[in-house]
Image 1 (tube, rainbow, N blue to C red):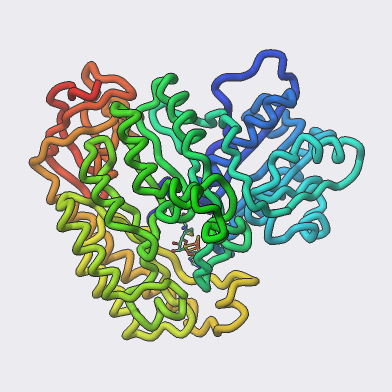
Image 2 (cartoon, helix red, strand yellow; image 1 turned 90 degrees about the vertical axis):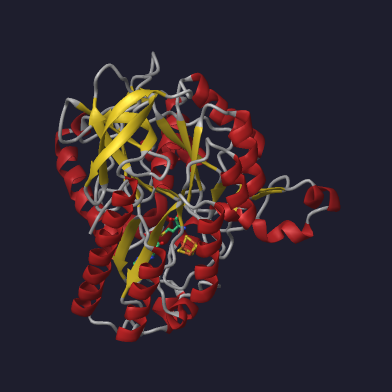
Length: 484
Ligand code: SAH
Ligand code: F3S
């Protein structure tokens, strides 16, 4: 299975460290995150809230006064990884008995008080909408009481919290624009752990991006479980939009408008967004993308399955034909667009024919990247309650392998298409394989590796693509672009 930055549940996102430590803060916070990019961003919000409470981050677990783990529930394996990690904390606590341990994120929301019973090491359980309550909850723990807040909110977006950047390369950053999800895909735990959908005030989004620009960041990814569903009408749940005043509805800002505003306001900043949902994506978004050079030509457009029967059982609200029509239209408006997928192999009742339909859909779209998973039943979801997890694990794994194998061929095909082109690349770090080479990404989100020469981190560079593997382009820089 190929992991990328997007879904990292079985890996630790580094032992997060704030680069700008606040003077006078003497308490030490060890914070680590699993799962989606939203979790990484939430940890930055948590670090910011606790920075006002006298905490600086540490990378040394044994040294920490407070250990926080931001968790993921999306698949069973993600939860098992966190449980194993808690054992490591248990070990560290032997050296430092005063250390307190808190669980944040989706597992906290899913398991609630049960966490305290099941894992003796845990002192504190805090759901994704309750991070503002952390200072109070920590005081409870310090007073010797257990502390739990897993209340989901109607309007919390942390819009006014300026996240401290953890493990940042200083080149790209993530800015949350919506929270929660209303889509209720039958396999997915997110609507239960992250609550109903709400959008963040565009002014606070713009202000956060401005502060990132002042710090010299070059690329912003707008984040949400379902960015296309973004709708600001003065605050509140998306589902209550119809009840808003006429004025609020008339002046509402949707995702296409937000994207347009960002691209115009920050012409030197490069923009990405994730994740798109086919049922909510409008062609307005594609037209805005076509209009602006600084919006990357890449859409993560999960489909989960190529079979209409499965899409229906998954409650995906669109057919295979509608998805193909959308993809065709996207390629028509922006021919160089790169698309990526999420696929689930072996959902309830999936037959060999359904699986073939998935492979067939992939042949049609020829995605540049893919994030592929074997179906994992999640307690509390409609699929867990109403459908039978019929596909044997061995069959799920075989189908998953076939999907991954086909995706690798398509990734190679898409990479080869780019050989010979001159592309603009934003340098984001040293290549993993060679200290003498930079790595960066082009507009389509493909990694490009090239000799360092005199270029530096954060430069936009024109690179001539000379060769490729299935997930990396290799080339040589030819000059500075006008974006510098
Ligand atoms: N809209 C979200 C989706 C989060 S879940 C986003 O921002 O990315 C990410 C992916 O995990 C889904 O698209 C789906 O492919 C996969 N997934 C979700 N629930 C799953 C389950 N129960 N078993 C296997 N994979 C699952
Ligand atoms: Fe999950 Fe479907 Fe929302 S995958 S996050 S319920 S769009």
